[in-house]
Image: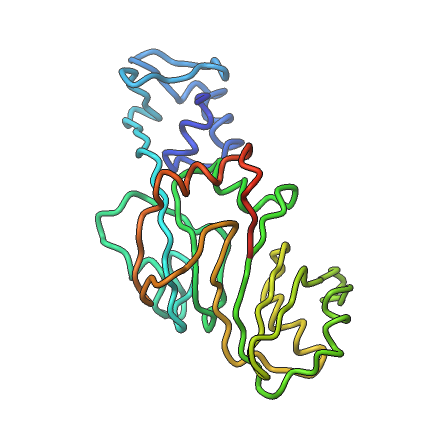
Length: 237
């Protein structure tokens, strides 16, 4: 791991900010200033920024069943409950990969692995995200074509990848985009209100029977399936 990535993973700042610290000579390795951007710290190296020791937590990734009423952020100016209130206080520093709005429920991934987060959010990887939604009235299947083509949301092209009716008012929806409140806003444009929205899958990670408000660590096989070479990974939102 190159020095700027090491510093970023430790929460010092963005890679660009860490580059500036290195260039300014504020980073030392084993007591000596290091301005070598290609240097890769080893386990026995002591890296400091402005004299303060820096360490990186081991990679750690969990899935969380977010309940309605919790916001997907570290802190909230309106003093609402956040998803981090559901986690043990002594956890490694984690950040959520993508968001669910306050009233939405379901699967969230939290990690301290920046590379994994990028793979799951970058559009080129086309990760599916799957939801179960409940509408305010009976669904008209004739309207599906509008959602599967394109609907413009404030100038952004939005579309749903797949849609499947479960009951007259419940649908399963698959997205490959990450526009804010996309599903709710798309259904509003065709005259429906989404009364409940639960994300049940991201890629091949499924919510399963994980209770609301609970979390679990990803298994080795789940982590392996998220690597780029794994062709079997499909995603949902």
